[in-house]
Image (cartoon, rainbow, N blue to C red):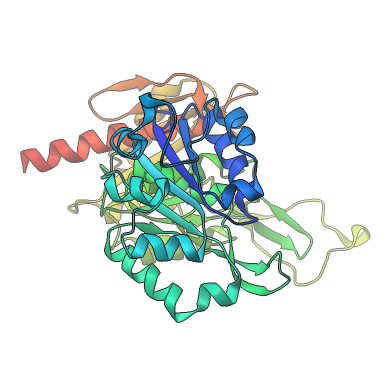
Length: 406
């Protein structure tokens, strides 16, 4: 599935905080991702944002009272609780946290949460001193004990001018948390190591050898794996991309640094995906000071870097790691892929077709071919995140099959 949100009913509980205006943007984003957002607004929330705002953004009128004049929704707390795929409570004020921790059912939101068996994600937002108060922290501990997922707030300057923890987290963080809760966790508990981005080999402090890799494919793989329940370590060369929520990132620059980081994590990883575009060569000499134009040599002497993927293949002989490599090719795709699959002792190779302006490097879309010893599958042209999902569909089936056969 390329979009975890499509067709899902997400109940969004909004309580009384200035941060409620941010959640209006979240509801809009959910609608764009084809989710059905049903909004519950407390009385206090309606003082900050008009119900009409959420109606316009979600496409349906928000629920604002336990006692609805429409007899078709007279039991709305039960109706919402039963139909929800997920509950999101944001912003969750100190009062809302206390009400939920006590198991109260004195308004529509608290009653619906008490009645649901869907996953519940809670996003606190309040003054930092209120958030740090022992009573609030005790309530959060209780809520976690109920099985609810409480997402820690961000720190920073508050609307009240206090500076500290209590700011509502950003949408990109919550989107990953929601996607993980909506996705089948077929990779739960697996430790996955992914490399991404380019490496840089210094000529001098101002110049280096590198390539066009942006890291987008590797970061998409990390995001997809996290959403499916894996414990993900991302070893990344220089990239402007933000690390996906829930993923541990190790930053490296050179091919040697990437080699060292990968080897350090080898033993603990079950699946290793080498999607980084590692520099094949580095300068023989890296100058300590910037080379002046009038003193520059006309030729640059290079030496070969260690082939990390080949080394991993050798290291994996007789072991049970699932090893996946990436290759960028513009012609003879299958033939070149088979060579690398065999020579590097891989379980799977993903061949990037880079002979197009909208596939391969520096773009959000891709067209790849999957190749193992038994089959060849050409995936459709699509987003890199969808490509990552399809790659993990293959991996999940392979792992489940090997478990059944063992």
